[in-house]
Length: 250
Image 1 (spheres, one colour):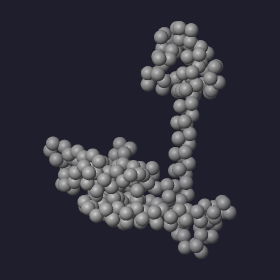
Image 2: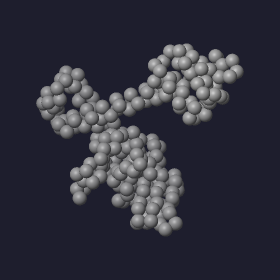
Image 3: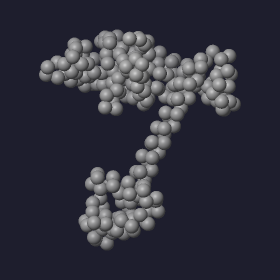
Image 4: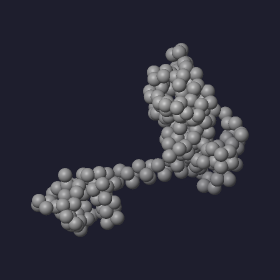
């Protein structure tokens, strides 16, 4: 099996990235928002939660580095999980895996850290790495404004000691970030739609609820959006149907 160099990164960078399956190596990697592809990580964090099954064949600890939380899981051989406890600061090297849409760390090396200077050093290292990667992304984005063609971009960047694969990774990371921004925008839009509907129902309700068609007409949103918003309000219990075709707010 091909072995990948563990990259130091923040937990936030991992959980905010996109997991990509790789059938070639029967695993995968996380595409970080800064354009790095990370399959093996080196994380310094505090243990804030722990669990081991009764038969000791499965266990996990929850790691928190101040930027986010992630679980480190072990299967069959759980000694690496059992030897740490809540409150321990640990230096972890492990591979990234995904199960049920949750990215977790499969540990290869775990060491308790007692020297507080170690944490300071790691923060400095991560800050320098972020600065260097940010500078590289700025150069790539600057050239991208001048050259829309990727091949032309790569030719221009070759003189700046930036590899072709770095360009492709940054472009892919930009797309992932745009997709997430669109998803966040859709989530905000749905919240706005739900608030409008609840407010409209409260204003128009004379006691026995409001007809669905009147709500759609009142809020002035596309019917598909109004319908989805109403379905969510009914599912979460913010509204209910006193009778078919009529909606009432709680």
